[in-house]
Amino acid sequence: MTKVACTIMRGGTSKGVFFKYNDMPKDKSKWNDFLLDVMGSPDARQIDGLGGANSLTSKVAIIKKSDKNNYDIEYTFAQVSLTERMVDFKGNCGNILSAVAPFAVNEGLVAITNSKMKVRIFNTNTNKLVVSEVEIENEEAKVEGDTCISGIPNSGSPIYLSFYNPEGSVTGKLLPTGNVMDSIETSRGKINISIVDAANPLVFINAKDIGLKGTELPNELTENDLKRIEEIRSMAAEMCGFANKEEATKISPAIPKATIISTPSEYVDLSGIKRNKDNMDVVVRMMSMQKPHKAIAITGAICITVAANIEGTLVSKIAKSNNNNNKLKIAHSGGIMETVANLNNGKIESVKVVRTARRIMDGYVYTRERY
Image (cartoon, rainbow, N blue to C red):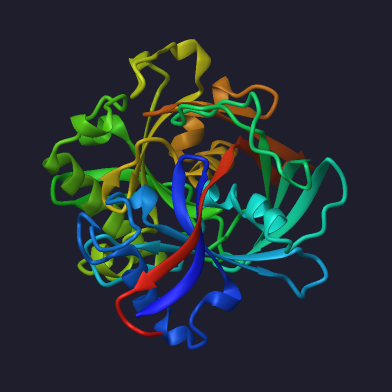
């Protein structure tokens, strides 16, 4: 058994275990086994670990003070599988990222400069810069505030995340296949998809092409729907070079993320709130580890925003005509998220979103094995 210091934090609509880099096993080859042990995986209930039996709560952030001049903090994200002996380090998680700066401030990894400060975060998964703006109160990251985000029952202090030069985060290409749209032959016929890599690679699927309205809530998607979506996602994974389509579910389950899109339409979200179609630019239903996401991945929102600005993608065909002042309103199962694109000579330089975060617990995790 090993005793390791850790913190549990909510970041946006996700929750994860935060470790300081120096508290992780010195031998990186043991990281996978260590994190599986911490979370209690593989086990759908994760009853023997800290995981919450959901992909949104089976996440890890590994943080250290950066020795690079252009960054303050280095952040490594890990998505821990519930049912497989697999930890995915390929992509980033923007929701968990929203808790990185508050964690770093409270742990003394960055010096407090003023009541509103910027923390430059280097995401090691994607080699990208994200700047987090946090408010400070009583020498700590402020928690209380009036900012509300869809999917979270309580308000909090605003945390602004700006994702800089998000294109090619994992594949090195904004358009991994070189095309704004690809036609693929599935077991149920030919459909068009768009694969875009910005902050995280996503494969976009038009809801009507797979027999969906696009406004379905997570519990309304059948097993057949999920199998159809995963078939398409697996084919996209092969097109990105992540894994053969037959092995993609096991080898690359987290990316690309399958994203169902549809035109603005009225629906009732998971909180029972009726969402008006006039207050949205695109309707999105994301998948997370082969299950419906109950909200939306922040990196997904970044990618959607970028895709909306690329002529010819499935997203641009829906969202571009509705876009206003570089703002995009994305309707998801948990509500509506707004992003703001910062353009420089017609090219997206950064995309900004607002989140909240909260420290839930500090303490120690006891693993079954020694590391």
